[in-house]
Image (cartoon, rainbow, N blue to C red; front, side, top):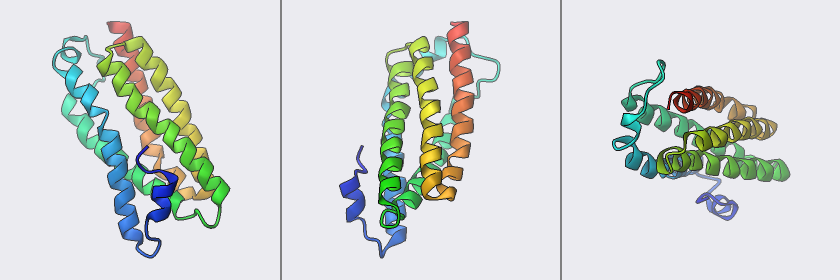
Length: 170
């Protein structure tokens, strides 16, 4: 992941807004990397699938993910700020976050890139559990960071339902 522990240490602690901007931008960029797989499968494949009744229009996903990634970046920043006060808890939280985020990007690769609905469902179920673990780890460091992930968990819960319905219908 681009925001490694050494990169976090180099961020200036006396410039918290700069560090916040770096955290948010990094999460946005890494998160958007999954769009490479989405763009490739959206028109040629996704458009041909039978859609669940609750599936929102495609244009909804970009703004929602942008907001969610911004909140993830802010949560990450809140945790990073506590590195001196709780180094072990912060290391654990950052490690869980990195693993969870790999599954976030990985879901796009499996669902859209490989066009594997069932495998995508397996990945998103693991992702959901990792989000809960990340919320727990973040909450141990800064309660606000854990709470910032609640909308993300709700959205991924909805995405899990959609993935399941796409799998059943197709």
